[in-house]
Image (cartoon, rainbow, N blue to C red; front, side, top):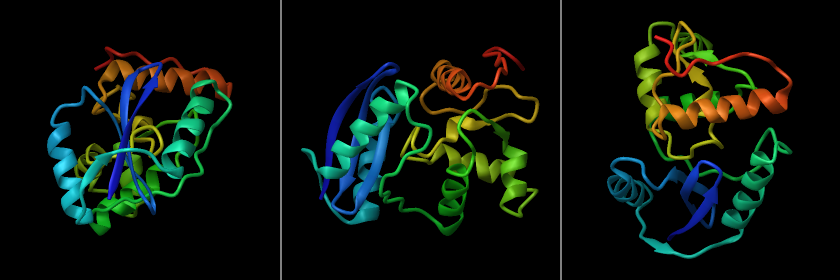
Length: 178
């Protein structure tokens, strides 16, 4: 069973989900097609979804609180990330991007030894069900433009600015850069 609970964050309400094996979802509640995402996740894990909580969700709440205070730069959570082999490789790769840094989709594809796969990498990033923890917000366009974030570009900019503030790296990000 996937247990879900709501979590208030400085960026708005999020919905978190976890099985007994780990966190499988963290999404903004206003994300488009959230109900379809629930259905797909339940199907992939061959289970049902119910409101509730467990130790993984308590840990997630604690670690998110520390992240938003600038006290946590990495997450130590058990994750359940069903997907294709390629998606799982992309999501694992995302977790290697250091706090406060960004890379382009091209750079991410190259780091996966697949230089021509920037679009496929972007699609896999968009399929990430565990926002912030699996930091797809750290991937930007080749020219540094903020593109492609399911939670919206304003949230992506906020997250990147937040991480820059607490990493000591002074890089300005332009929300409207093209």
